[in-house]
Amino acid sequence: MRRRAGRSSATRELEVIAPSKLMIDNVSKSFQSASGTVLALDRVSLNVAEGEFVCLVGASGCGKSTLLNIIAGLEKPDSGTVFADGKPVTQPGRERLVMFQEPALFPWLDVLGNVLFGLKLKPNLTNKDRRDIAKYYLELVGLSRFEHANIHELSGGMKQRVALARALAPNPRVLLMDEPFAALDALTREQLYGDIQQIWESRRKTIVFVTHNVREAACLGDRVLVFSPHPGRIQEEFLVKLPRPRDINSVDLAAHATRIRKSLKSFSQPEATVAE
Amino acid sequence: MKRFVLAAGFFVILLFLWELAFRLKIWSPVLLPAPEQVASYLKSSAADGTLVSATLITMRRLLIGYFVGLIGGLPLGLLTARWNLFRDTIGTMALGLQTLPSVCWVPLALLWFGQTETAMLFVVVMGTLWSVIIATETGVRNVPPIYRRAALTMGSKRLHIWLKVILPAALPFIVSGMKQGWAFAWRSLMAAEIFVTILTGFGLGQLLHYGRELSAMDQVIAIMLVIVVIGLLADKIVFSPIEKFLHRRWGTSQA
Image (cartoon, rainbow over all chains, first blue to last red; front, side, top):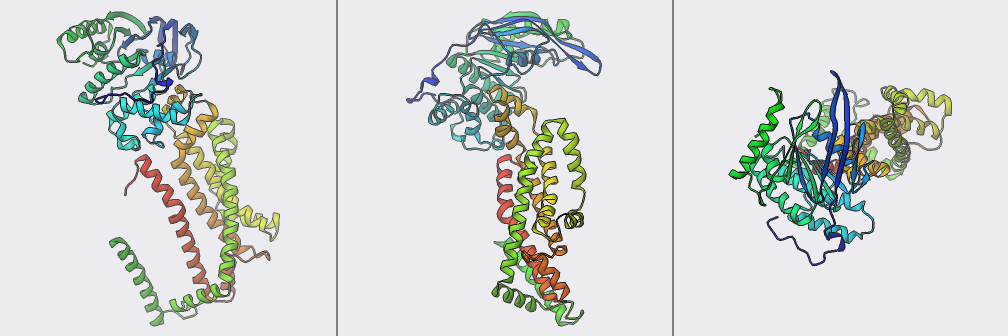
């Protein structure tokens, strides 16, 4: 991030491709739990424009992660459909890559091997292309020096950067992020807010970002959707029209965050907690 | 270096105590020969070729049996981890038979196959197979589901997931299962060789057996030493490097 990420042997693969548009149409999903059936998502509809950065906020267990998994194709909705560029999503695929809360990196591969994993599944590339692309993204996240490091040698923040590079490398049209920074310390997180905004602008992705952190949502999203739990529904929608890159500590941002938090609290149960 | 000197010192002291016990005539020399006698047996049997040929015959049996056990055990372990049908049938059987000491297979093998190489091989395979199945299954079941999900979103499917995600993720378990399988194979082969006297070749176990018949204690102890050294070498040359690599990669190392 801190170095300029440019490379002369840029293959066609590295050219920015058009981000997707998503349409979530009337999606419902319920789970069986010990206390009976839980309606995780109740007829949720949502449109995400091409290249838009949408944040979903809500307390734990409000169904926002379930929605993300359904968009990814990792789970199937009970009813309703997700469309990506007009085509229904039926299975996971590399057009919509997911970044999880845990880095989910493969410990049997080194850093470069992890970034190459998705690329190796992409046809029509030579192995040299793949290596160049992987190195490009490692440079983009500022980890060029660590390409042969083992995963366990990295700090939490570095692991998430590798996970980000791995998710970006196959050049997906949608990036789905499920509380990717929740387990990191505040300083590392602030750095990554800057990085992710910069990458979003330079690589042009549609991003759906799930979080329970209101400030984070206001800092990153063009639009912030507030989820209410039991049943999971989209309660309210906020547009955040602040200039980028945004600083998480700015006063304007705090004002937005306050409005969003108020909305969240209006329907939260007393025990439900929402992080600052 | 310091560790090496200490370890070497330990074995020198052990040897010295042995020599001392022999010189003090605590036990009859028939029961406890001098280190020197054992060494001279090793020398002469190495010179006339008995030791080398016995070692080769034993290693051949061991390796064939072990690899048959591995080649059968790995896929069966994967199957038991993947489908409950296999888990309830083959998995349960493996769990049960794994508790059976492998020497218990010898009478059955003798009755089924007679004094043949097949009997020997059968015992070794039975010693290896079940523990490899169990280890593979445990390994696969312990793979965090998030790896699979991450791989799925990157476009990995079925066979690719199994080969490139599940199998490598389960590798630490599989390797410790292979190591255990090796130890079991080694034990069962020795049991088989001591009990099964066949004419297709004298292994180390048979030398041990005839050492007892002839009351040649130097032979008995020498062969036991050879067996110990082979076990140690297998560990140091084959398994230790693999385990070291896994520890380094996974970050589970102690030293």
